[in-house]
Length: 134
Image (cartoon, rainbow, N blue to C red; front, side, top):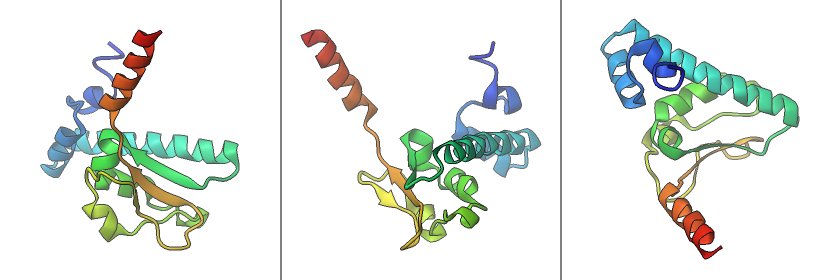
């Protein structure tokens, strides 16, 4: 039950963030809540890591949501200007599925905000080849 019916699914009946966004745009309060909780959890972990580390050079968004969801990136970063984190909202809005890393930060920002593409299939293939080779 925790793996299949919790999180986004438990909050709004969908586990695909694209569907959650669609429902929220249609005015579904449960989808709005699901997005708010999703972003809150990311921000909570981000704050915890920054507190433990004492500093950071960059915040990196990657994989499916991080590479393709400018709204989530915007909401995660919103309000962090006081610690030196700010993004160019126009650049953020245009970045989806880039094949190269993209810096969303303003020039000179003390903490960079990056979107870094992943290639999970290539990594799986490399690890498989290493395991098979022994």
